[in-house]
Length: 637
Image (cartoon, rainbow, N blue to C red; front, side, top):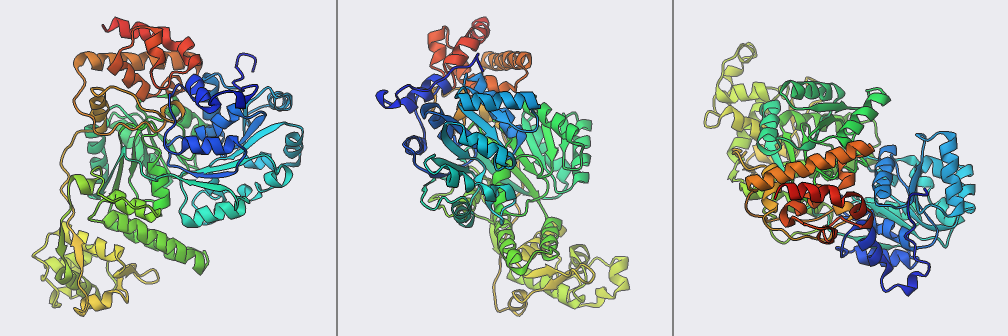
């Protein structure tokens, strides 16, 4: 710890604004953004807080700045070893006295961190909830001068959530033993029910709630009809992200392995990650992803919480998640630096069927299934909406967006709707007349008048519905059935043949008592990618205040493209960053975020004074890296 500095003010009240001074000198930003200033001031004064802020919004600063202003040690409760390691690495790179306590340390290393806590030689210590609630650690806290408790990923306390961690239920003990030490609970994923649970379970009923917008304006949301998902995904990557890092989520471990192998065969470096891999393989793959450039991680939902890589430029879902909370959190891992990013999902009939099957086959109680059913309906509504996706997503979290966002597929390529009442009646009639035993493939053959062997064997070519659907194509009928299942007019027979069955909601439709509007699946055209969008930013120049190392820097609406000279400088700066990171054994983004490199391209600083004005350049990084990057800039004129 001797090589690091203490940024504590001996008398914080004597400084004009110690929090702002820490932001400038340590993190390299000139102003707070959003509610950061209010949150930080409240916590510095000793108040409890519940902070809900989107990923990339600068949540970490809301406890890291108070930790450097208040006297004592800040204890950060973090659920994952990888998250602790990455955040401590980034803080130490800034010169902050930070450490973690987890199973990756040997006994001697752990004792050294504990001694540093007691002696006040450390500002932040990250610890897992399992360790924190042990009698030994609680006694250690009794011997330590404490500044603050930060409870990160606080949604893990919710038993209704997808990241439930039972150890979080015991964290109320902190307030019981240390009632005068302020607590700040932080999360990016919490609907109203989860927020209430956090306050109750953590004893934060009197805490001030800071609810930021859930909007991530730099992310473009796209949902495409699933046709040939591998080729669709590959085309998306080649058109939009030819050299970017990203995450691809799959439902099963087997699919993760298959897609990862296939992408490598297509010339794209990809790594698998799922709970079935040996721990050392998972850790090695995650380390390669974090420290590498342009690597694609193909994973189940076992991967992602706590991933602190800011330049993930895309998140793909080859299979839809189970809820909008999961979707929001997983897609939120893209574009943490505020630069343009894509959230792309392929979605088809089989997904709707499998999601409903999993829900109905769940062994959970009826109350839990009813909650999960509502979450699934919200997800399917998001996938099928003809209106602005961002409006639907934000509305789910209790937030309204007055105007369509202009940065999702339904805004960029408006979706048509049509009166699908007659088509729905034909589709439902085919289900009923064939005995409610068949899936979409067979039913579409009946509607199109395809006298396949199966159709003839069942005498379905003699039905009134045989051939009545020739006005629509096979793809259009697949869309009709998908939307009817998603809307709840049809369900899947789980006890019989696995075919479609009419629901009570479908009966008024088939009787002509209710109209149905359907969306037309759009034809997706080639478009400019985020890789180009990154470059179009640079022509604007200027800087914006951000979170930790540039979190949340918004740069929408940029125009123009990089010149060949700027493109060469951009890659040279990235190469310089990679060499420095490799020499130190840290991820490249710990040196500087992409947003800072883009500012170097735009502003081309010529001396240390100008370099110091770049966003993300604090005193420590100015001393360590200015000369190396200034040399690169000088070499490129």
